[in-house]
Each structure stands twice: as structure tokens, then as C-alpha cells.
Length: 115
Length: 117
Image (cartoon, rainbow over the protein chains, first blue to last red):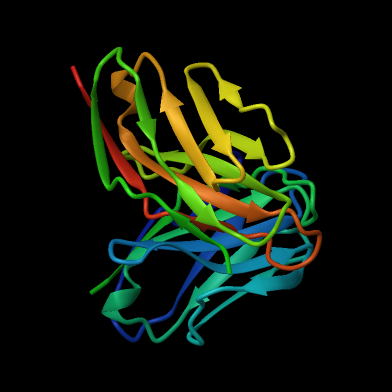
């Protein structure tokens, strides 16, 4: 158990709908990362938050947004869903966002299926 | 931008034998971190081993060790005494050590490891 908690574990929804994925980082971790893993794209970095502040954006679509709340949990919002958004969405966390090279720990992921 | 390449999409090894997974990366930075993650059928991402670029000594974690060649930008993973539970997808990953900017992990495409009993 990495200590990173993601909900829901599985989600099936229809095209055009909106979903929210939730992540609780490990206790004490200030950084939260979101990754998408699909069959054809591999592991893609979406976005990084540190202590409530957005630090970096990767290949995140405009239909997707995220935020990190004062209690450090994070949500990834996916809207106007398309079939191609079906993927495993990982949340990960680390202690700080600095040059200390501390390890990034992953949650178990949220499986999203768009039908 | 940094890139990570794993040239072996699939590997297989007999149980109890040794296997080496290859990884190369491209970066202009001198300070960074390298990782191997394991993803079993459960799809969870599990850290196997990490290496700091400033350390010349290769990291070791029980049956797992790395061969880090900084000049060649190579970071291979050696699994000794392979066990059935080692069967998984293995990802090599790079992370910048810069204090600002992207702290994300850059992943390779993965190597699927099969253990033959």
C-alpha cells in the first residue's frame, strides 16, 4: 500500500458526460501528480500541483482540469468525455516539489471506461 | 525535453535465472534521478529501485540492481534469481532534480517481463 488513495477505482460513463476523480496523497506529501495510462499512449503526465499551486502541465486536454484543495487532496475533472478518454488515471504524490529527488508514489489508479 | 527509451518491448527468463532490462535516456541536465517501476497485472505502479545521478555507486535493492552509466546515458535493471512474482511490466523513468520547473516523471514505453517456471 503506497498510502495514496484514489476513488473511484472503476467508473463507466457515457460519451459527453463529466466525471471527477479524487485523490488523497500520502500523509505529509505536498505534491500531487496526475498521469493517464492508455493502451496506445503509454504513461502520460497530465498535471502537477504543489501545496495548492499548479506547478506544471503536461499533455492535458482543455476538457480536463484539476485542482488541489487546502487539505491537499486533489480532484481531476474530465468533461465532454470521448471514447478515447478511456484509460487508467493515476494520482501520485511526493513530499516536496524541490530538487531533493524524493520518490513519487502512485495510487492504484481509477479505471475510466467511456461507452 | 527529456526522453526515455526502452528498446525491449518483451523479455522472458527462466525462474531462478538472471535477466537484464535495458533503458537509455536523453537529457542535457547533469543532476537528475532515475527509477524503475514495476506494474503487475493489478496495474499498480510499484517502485523497484532509484538512482541519483550524482552517485557513482549503482543502487541495489535485494535481488534488484542497476547498471548506471552516466556518460552513455544508460540505466539497466538486473533481476537476479527471478521469481514468478517478478512477472510484470517494467518502466524506466527519469526525473529532473531542478528545484523549479517540472518535477514530473518521464517514462519509457515499458518492457513486459515473463517468468517461465
